[in-house]
Image (cartoon, rainbow, N blue to C red; front, side, top):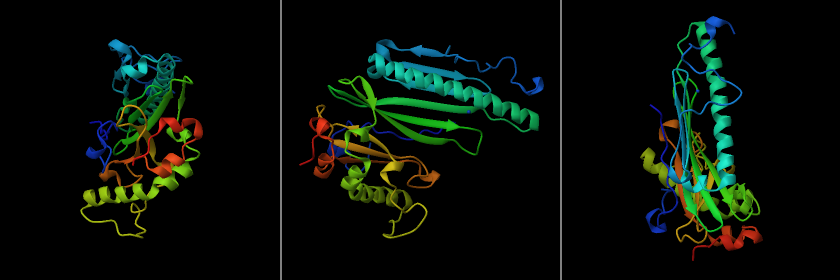
Amino acid sequence: MIHRVALFLLAVPLAACDNEMSVGAEDAMPSDDVPVAAGSPDVSGAAAAAGGARSVSEENEVWNFDYSYPAAAGQIPGLAALLDQRLDASLQELKETAIEARADADKSGFPFNAYAESTSWKVVTDLPRWLSLSGEIYSYTGGAHGNSGFDTLLWDREEDKARKPEELFTSLAALEAAMREDYCEMLDRQRAEKRGEPVVEGSDGLFDECPGFGDLTIILGSSNNRTFDRIGFLAAPYVAGPYAEGSYEVTLPVNRAAKAAVKPEFDAAFTAAK
């Protein structure tokens, strides 16, 4: 069964989420009924929903693939093209690696478990200039368990281009300096809830340190539907805790220090908490 991490969309009222955000030789080749990788991915399993949403699914004995994005993204031609390019590249890479692994397993006489990859994009917030998306990712390459992760994408309608959320700040270091203390405090609260005991200050335990913002997925959200006034920090398994603890998601209001770290040309896009 595909393990999926929880994902909040940063669109709920601040008071409701001040603690968290809410896959050779002829005898080594796949059987005839399994598609073989080609120069152009076969997306015959694609299903386009009304309004621009897209969902692609392929499943066979060698690979399982899912990729989806919402109507709000599909309605923007440039963004839809970008996501379709990523879809095609992901599917092609999965096919090639899964077929190679299947062939190797057959040669060695080892059992083979179908490779899997799933990407689900969701709207975090939709503002007049900005569409903020978060991606939930799962991959499995035959090991004891799969791996979960996150992605983020910010579409700038004014410039008709994709940006990373941190591009709106003078630097990632400046954003971290402004919000790290609040983030680490909230993260440790969540760790304590999962572990049943507090994280000891100054502990050098493997998963007791607070991760740097470079190891996190950062997403921008809004509670007022006008400006970004909250920031989500997503830590995939193994980043802030062991696999068994799953992911950690912390949502914080944009504080004054973070607002001051915004590049001047994007200042109007943010509101700091009072």
